[in-house]
Image (cartoon, rainbow, N blue to C red):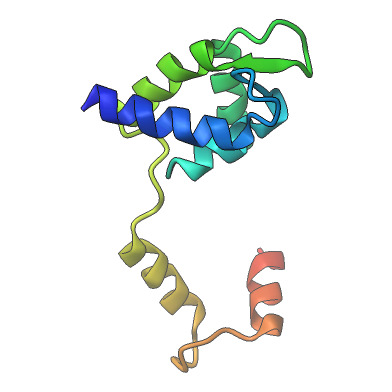
Length: 114
């Protein structure tokens, strides 16, 4: 199981390794993590980056530092997406007319009013 997870992580990392030197720009970490089915917020991405021991701010992350951190994240099932039924329930609460859609105006109203 760990070998499969590490292979999946390495493949995702390599997509963003433009120089093929086992490093990626630190700004790509959130995209890589999300491509692996994890959905952390930006603060959580920063916490992960701190664990990866980036040499200098705005620098690069090496695969050898990324791999153990992400392996633990995937094994622990951290940052999972919100279950579909919860999202559907939230949508239905906003769909006051029960028509199966929310107008732009209603969405703006719900998002901007207290």
